[in-house]
Length: 265
Image (cartoon, rainbow, N blue to C red; front, side, top):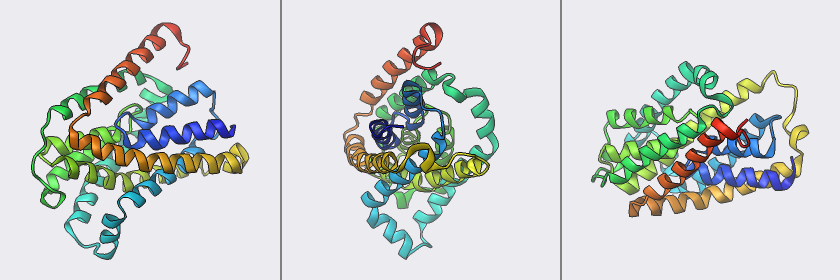
């Protein structure tokens, strides 16, 4: 992998992890475009660590409060929201990978994300703050997060939409979604590391030090600004523009998969 390619993948991961357009779908897309298929799991771990850095920097006050006072309602809500995600990942990850892996149905999944975003944009949002959410609210959001293990289904799009549907106000819907991403990203990293234990290629051997550093920085910086941008967009209720984007992208990919076979092989 060249430094330029590592930066592009880092930017893609950082932006699409928090914008509601699916990081997994875009990474599959760009890996196909670049023809990168070796040790992508290892590089994915590195990029996910970088996106975690972005969350910690932006929400450091919230995270510090959770660390200093772990036995609080927000902690319970985050745990409750993580449980259905973990259950779905453990029970259905291999099945979903067999059915939807290697970019299968990626175009249709992008369109599904677009439909969810259109619905979310129609939700005015309620007055609930995170502290007012019920455990059931959190379980619903976590279940939608679990659905996002499918490629091209946006994690942030699913969780923010679910929060808005449960009458959480827009700013707190974003905050809860991004805080909930921390255990989700960590869990995904653990599963990926487990799958790599028997692998033969080391991370530095596959990519080199400089591409690793470049990709990490690109993902962390772009992730931070993506969070800032996304919070502002959610407050203004303009998710429909993301739905337009994924509708167009999904239509292009469906056409390619059915007839051209140029992008997703």
